[in-house]
Image (cartoon, rainbow, N blue to C red; front, side, top):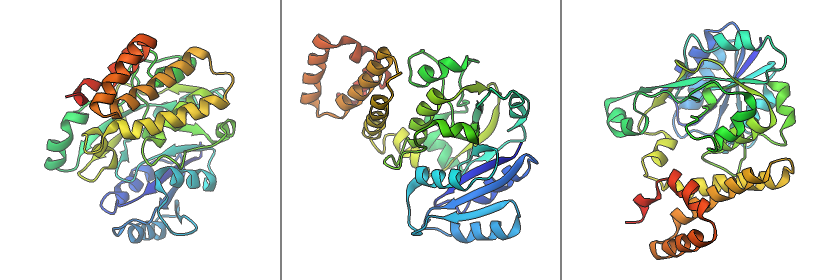
Length: 312
């Protein structure tokens, strides 16, 4: 295996060295691609030092040296990658020694396009633990059971009940399998671009479970995580998820092979978050309307996002 590990770097001067060194422990890692995304801290200088110190580390920036977001940075990493396999790692996270144990066996089967596993959590400070433990706890982010690849797409969409989640840090993909996708990460999404990518990826290629009952990578939680600001409602989660589902539905319109029941589910999810964003009076009016015209939207969508917290 020749694995290219892609690490987008933004405001991660304290953590990126640990991320890189956690990937360097594997002989299978052919290269580590750092995409420095105009960090406001000293991350660029740290990346330059890592590039000089390790022959497998390669540093890139966007052509205009400006900030383009994690999605665009990962896209650049995919374009620059020379390995046969692609893996991802956030700059404030790290791999565990068992990261590629399952992959080394499963990828002997040429019909397996991608493998996913379980993500653990580490709090970098007591303040981070106090602020975010209610969000992440000590739980694994994982798909709860081993599923057939044909069920991963609908499972990720939330159509199969308690399915669980794939995290990008635990995903390894054959690079040539990405040719089946019309695009990689959506630059229009500054958050949840990984979720949208995983939706489309699970539709286009065959994703198999690796190690699901123990962590193969670790999410590092600190006070400046972008996504934790959404998860703890410092940013209204409905705002970013409306944008996510708009992109998902836009893609679905171009895929004529997606069944109608799945298309309806996608539209219901978008509608649910739109209702959650509406002012209270307007929101109640929309709820009454949909209760009469499309009850399933309320049941499947609004139940999933616990909209009642926003109504009072």
